Length: 482
Image (cartoon, rainbow, N blue to C red; front, side, top):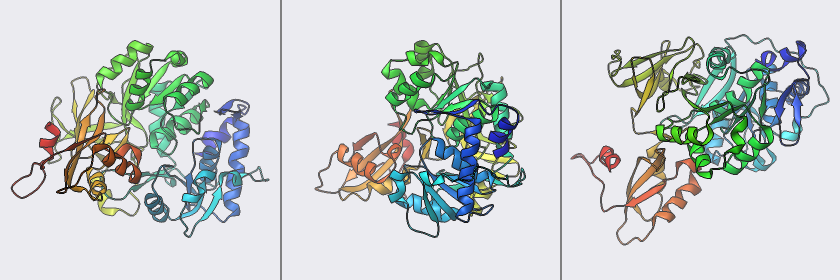
């Protein structure tokens, strides 16, 4: 992949073309090749061998891209880590992937736990040696890992191979983005997410295009500033961000955007309509997964069905099945199974969860869908109680366990609820201990201090009791109906 992403463009005479657009400078493909080679030589210098993992705890920027591709070029396996991961999550992922090296931003060095790994600050990637031979990896060898929080339990290490990205990026690039070297991409989703990794690295660099990268958290103002500076033609975001941008109502910055893409969670039809009225730009909602590598089902320009996830792309195939794994007719709800050449090899060291999710050539998504007569897929919810917030999984059990640590909480239950924009957020129903006095804001703050920001309950309702079955199980469906 290092050859296809960088070296090929230099060898074919496109070395002067822009690859990365940063706040302070533009990095050409020739310059990126040097940075990639320096990063790879630095990793070799600290003893990294082929197939060993290199953890990246970095914001979006040139160092992330150089380290990611540099690791692949020496046959090592880059493992991007969420920069917002809590200490115990970070420690688990580093130990689980057996990282040989951790490359961290200076501001995050203090959060890296001690362990059998070397720690490099990002400025240490500079190396006097600018030449690097490409290790001869094959299409079926490990290329990169990403950790997916999934539904329950510890994060799962998703193992992708060198051939995977061509299989999933190519149909999207040809059928949806129609990306050309003149295009500039900008993604609200960060590089350490599967969605962001393709938006800002694999998709543009495979096409010889360029990507705009900012280190700051892409809130509304930073996003608008980036759009004003970089004038991207392809904009990638998530429904929560689209709702915030619509509320800001300062959308002149989107005049350069020819294509807007949404993924991570379903895009509600009213939000699509509001965005289209404000900007005149279609939002192409799509469905992807970390396990498949990118968006495998999408609306395409001029054929959008608002509220749907679109249709399958390329050679990707879909089944809608019942509880027995039998196909159901169009118009009936069932679990979505996907077959794609880009599907990951397995979950690292999690055999049982691998067997449950990877069924022969098919991947069980855990999502309920209906397929209409034209092949469009319409989301019906999750098979279980977990749900996505801002494109990231939230397990009610994790939030409930956190709330139960509060001394005033006796019982609680967390379910998915929708806000005014019809976007899914956590809601907590809490029974307090006798005599305890606590308000919703205090409980929200308690969770925010202990879990990642997207997991805290946006609403907390204090109740006298939780609805339960005769055997004492909480009836979550009753709470959802409320």
